[in-house]
Image 1 (cartoon, helix red, strand yellow):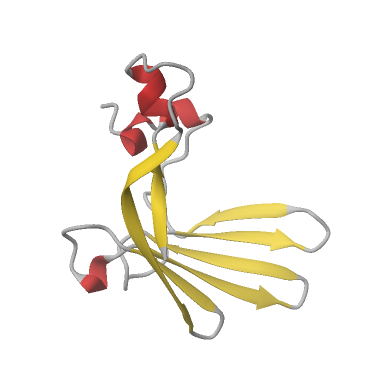
Image 2 (cartoon, rainbow, N blue to C red):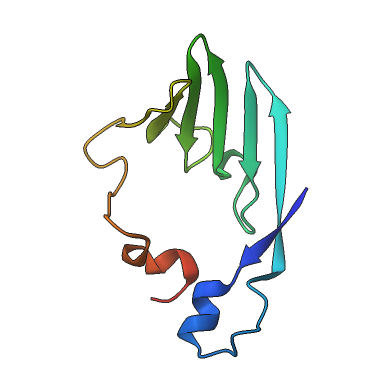
Length: 114
């Protein structure tokens, strides 16, 4: 499966006209596997296969568990839980595992703006 890149923040940063498409190239490959749940591998150009980031999704008796692997085949950096009653939780696996920020504006690196 090929996923387009979200360019909205870059377009705004660069002063693009309002009618500029928010999604476009480059397109990234996304693979998924049934592996005691579902494993979704986000293909990152130039990274070896074992370092490709992935998420693993499992159904639990009363909700969903999502394991975050930013470095591929390593320990999870954190977990996201969605309960069937609508609650959600984020659990960090260590003190430096995930950097938390209060707003999306706090992550300009994801859009290449820094």
